[in-house]
Image (cartoon, rainbow, N blue to C red; front, side, top):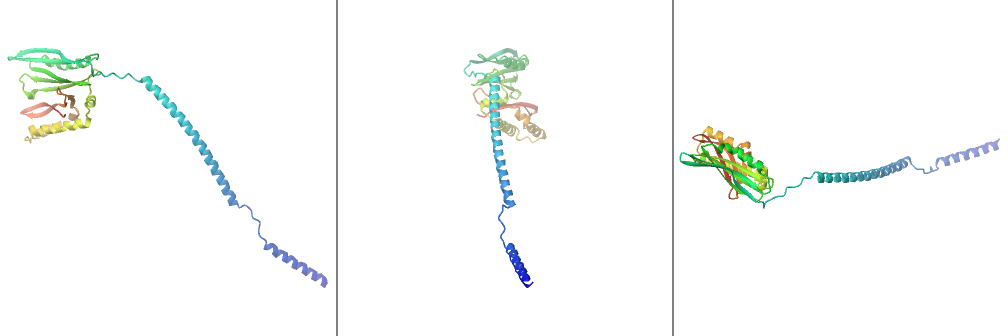
Length: 279
């Protein structure tokens, strides 16, 4: 019995020793879940970058093809719809002469009427000349006025400067008119077209006109402080009045302007046409 207890004690001690040994053993190294997750994420990002790169390439190729097609279509359309450019004719023979002439004696004076026309070799000016004739034929047939003109022939335009004057010859009763004709088309030139030919910007021209009006009031009516004068001066400096000024080239080849019908206080209320040069 004692032998059995001794043996049992020995066995119990051995079992306790083995249990302690098991508790002190080191665990085996395994792949951590976090490492595995990061690896998958990296793989996913790499795949995404590859896909994006492929999509960008496809988009670029598509854009290039579209641009090429658009360019081709535009070029074809321009070629198809392009109108022939008129050939300038600066050397074409240009003549300005009467298309209507009349003289009449009134009070011992001979009053002449000369309505001009522009003739350009190889260019149709019929519409331009008809407009000028229709404007002045009624005035020309009256017995109380003179009508005469001067002109300038430039490389690209012809400027007509027409004066209508009462038989008294009073300078304040003169009415002035300007017409510009293209030597290329034979048509009447607009204000912007004439300024382009003259090489003058619209803003520079309007500034010149505005200053001319201001100087006229200061020089002729500076001492007039009446309310009527101030009202007329203000009206003459409105945007509509300034924009109505007409550019032209005078008989001496200088750049000029004409502002028609400014109301002024010359005794009874009257009107004048203001004109001048700036070259």
